[in-house]
Length: 65
Image (tube, rainbow, N blue to C red; front, side, top):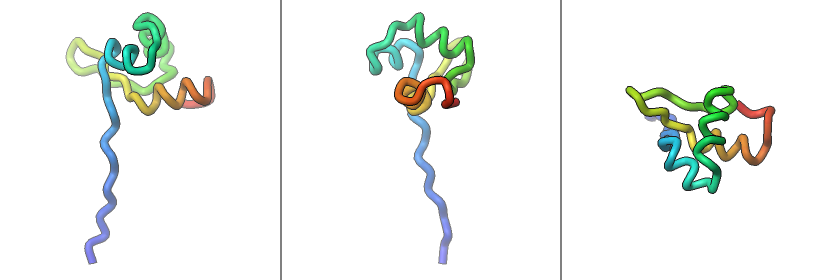
């Protein structure tokens, strides 16, 4: 048997796209990144936000990272 575990890829968005998709201000998303409240990666000059992490933060607040 082949015991492969399939993981979903994270939904990554630019700051502007994440703000538009969630209805937040771009400035607020940038502040969450600066304070390291949500997961993100830096790809060159762009920051990519983990959309699931952002949504979890909005639903559950400070305890999520």
